[in-house]
Length: 376
Image (cartoon, rainbow, N blue to C red; front, top):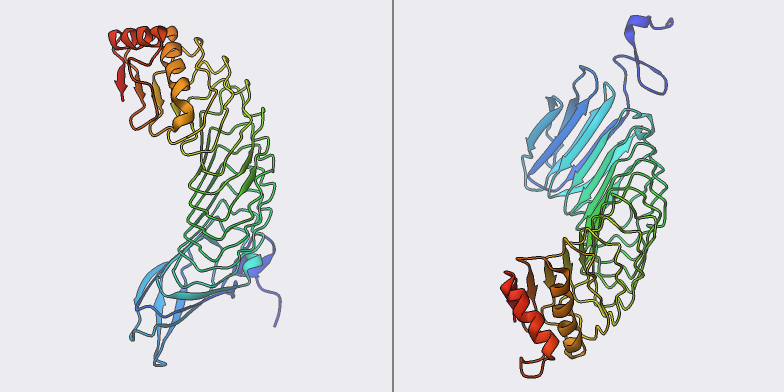
């Protein structure tokens, strides 16, 4: 057999492969009665899927997207010998137990991998040079191999209760990191100086106790909620027109370092934290909202007169150690001079009108006169 003609050869990214030849294999096993497969190719090729159900019956399906109803409730197996370069894969199946990607290292054009199944325990990944998004959701995966994907823009991980560690890398163009309900995730390294990171949003990761922030010069939103964070290390490099939103909701958080360089900060929330002090800065001239509810022993927090855009303070359910602070906040909000704001300290420990200082009562009356809503 001679060399193939150039017309029969296609560029497969990393090497020349015969145009009609095998370009890896996808094999999946499912126990569900319905499996949704979505595989897109960067050329005009379509895949031929060999379907074997639990009774041994074999059929073939042709197409980039198929919905296959297994003949029995016990599911079956589907195999595709790839005819071309893929640029995206999506697998949505409640009973998907195994997803094996043979030849995955060759898939240099793969852009997206999205896997959703509540039974998946095995997933193949590789160092795909063009991968931009990877998402895994509702999987009992104990581990996922990650790589220094140079074009990764977005990583998402949701409802993976067996995942204990997710290795991160110095991804040069990552902009979004999102995760939730990974209850056993205890190791997630955020100390990389991700230069393009815009949003990091994680919640309900019940075993994660420490986050060390990296330089993140373009970060706009940082959100960690309902997890036992005792340590959250911040950076003064979250500056200029970037950081807008910082929210850390953890009843284990006793201290957080703030920085005057956060001049664009718009919203801050530390609801339920165990803070006793919180240092603010008069350089936060764009701050509009501050959420400090359910903090029981906060003794020091200053609202600065330079905060001329500030209009909302949530102090609900604050504890006995905060009564004097609330009086100070009334005076400080009055000093700002703005109108039509809201101070909400319902169910918080606060002084009655007869106990409050004359200056605090005057400030309260002034705020009401300027259209502020005082909820108590």
